[in-house]
Image 1 (cartoon, rainbow, N blue to C red):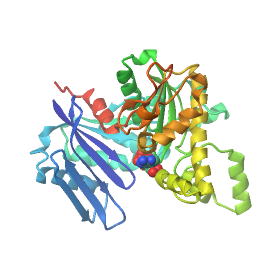
Image 2 (cartoon, rainbow, N blue to C red; image 1 turned 120 degrees about the horizontal axis):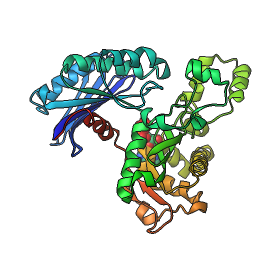
Image 3 (spheres, rainbow, N blue to C red; image 1 turned 135 degrees about the vertical axis):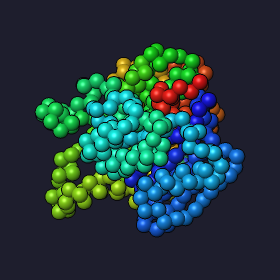
Length: 398
Ligand code: ADP
């Protein structure tokens, strides 16, 4: 048994988990959330019920990492740093450079920051800074970069290319890369385990429905298509993002409203989706509450959200020429039996069904009736464990 740390740095946050592998037991977890120059929040919680919560002045990610190590010792989660056998860092964009997890050295950090930063400007540079701090603090511990895009790297050209002049792909890397790959990988692997069938005998549609949302078609353990693209803007309707839209309409609105590209991108990324349609909230729970109270636009936002997911399911049944399992995960997918029921109720033509009693759960479960031709599952995602599993490939845990 060995202790792995899984690190997930966002533009202003740093989430971490210490996980015993191969058992996949989380012994401590927490986050540092910078909410401005002052008033950052530090949280640490271990599996014995101890909690540390502090409001501090944390100026950057490097300082957040130092704080984390200081508190891990102070809270007696670990006695010394040698107990950590490996670290896995989530990286949003691996482009075409990294199709698998890779051991981190200074050159890898440089590539993630300099060469791949343009594909995820809010994430990759911050993640590279965190890696540097970890390398400094734990110079002798294997550290592994785990890419959100890696699971999608098996997509065939037919599905990752846009119908643009081919040179733009060659010169600028203009193609679909996908996101949420670690989550899609975890839930498709769990699906194969729960159903007791090898991955290479399964056609699975995975639906990661959180603030950001994406669906993926996984055939024989390999991604063949995914709904997010060059950026996380397209695909299904999301909390604040449009999902698929006619690009000419974007040009038309910019002209009509005299908007700059930055202003328009801000509308498409931050003011659209559930928030834009409902005018109530980007948060699905609040949209559903307003809908219950008879708010028409909230009901419309909900219906459009469901409809777009159904369209992608239909799309991926066609892409794979069949489907054996549909799996829901993330904030909305894991917690809302109603969303799962409404989505599946619209795609019963190929045999998908939900049993309302089995569906009344937030836990890992098969929610379709026994013997149904298509299995429907709820699988709470666990990206941290999937990251730790990637680290184990580089560290002997026995
Ligand atoms: P992120 O993409 O930021 O990680 P999450 O996966 O945490 O997001 O998902 C957040 C979304 O999950 C929010 O829209 C929230 O309203 C929704 N959610 C959480 N619990 C429920 C629930 N019981 N019913 C419906 N939606 C829920």
